[in-house]
Length: 120
Image 1: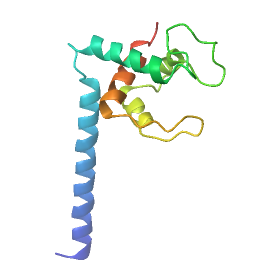
Image 2 (image 1 turned 90 degrees about the horizontal axis):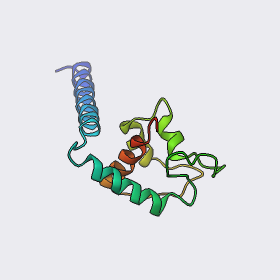
Image 3 (image 1 turned 180 degrees about the vertical axis):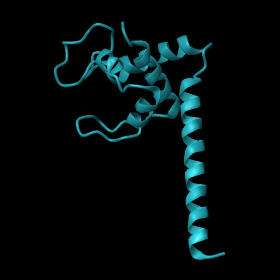
Image 4 (image 1 turned 180 degrees about the horizontal axis):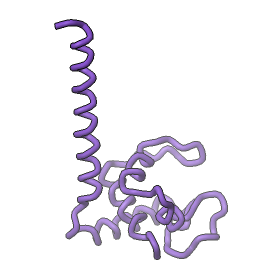
């Protein structure tokens, strides 16, 4: 097998694995357990109150109380806010935020809570 064929096969395999990973992430985010959605939102709300409310307005319609950090309502109502964008957010360091180390389950319930605020 020539060198270019091996590179092409390797690149194709990498692209295929990336697509499968992204599909599984989107499926997992979109397919969050519907029966447990209320409990996920409630748990996300509890975590938001415990961890986030010193800087963010975590309750609906509380925008304006905190000047530096956006309210969870404002985050939820942004056009680009999705389960996937929040999942990426939780895994990224941010200059003006403490470095949170949270489990994937905690990230999912916080995301569920934020998304539950959309349009309220």
